[in-house]
Image (cartoon, rainbow, N blue to C red):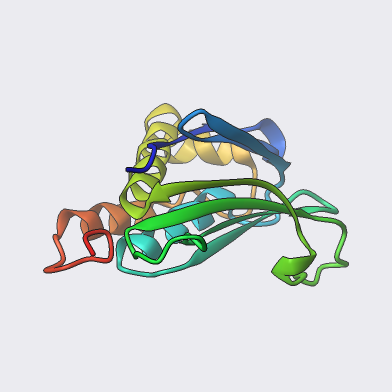
Length: 170
């Protein structure tokens, strides 16, 4: 049995945001990170990858000059496919080049189900949409990418279809 995932996304003003990621009683704050990447859109697309039977996905959040990286994938200590890990690493200034995972500093690791991660991302993206909508999101976030409505719609569509046998059920 794995713990539920919760994400509390704080859309910051002028392109600086953060979120608290919790799995059970363990939690970490990711950020602040800037709008040089499509942070919320990348998070939703990572969940879409997992929801469509992807085994691993990662998201980079640019904190100028450092990087936060969220990695979702098979839990290394377990042999089954039903359990995933959420890991958060930080990287120093890499001069714009992505550093290998081994060079990151691990801040957080917790076991969860793929379904719990996907559901948490869906809930938080819908909450941001409900609070801000397209215009409000653009005004507050200020980045080059608008609200990831297509990605959110694709995520909703993906989880509405039950796979004959998903990696969540193995």
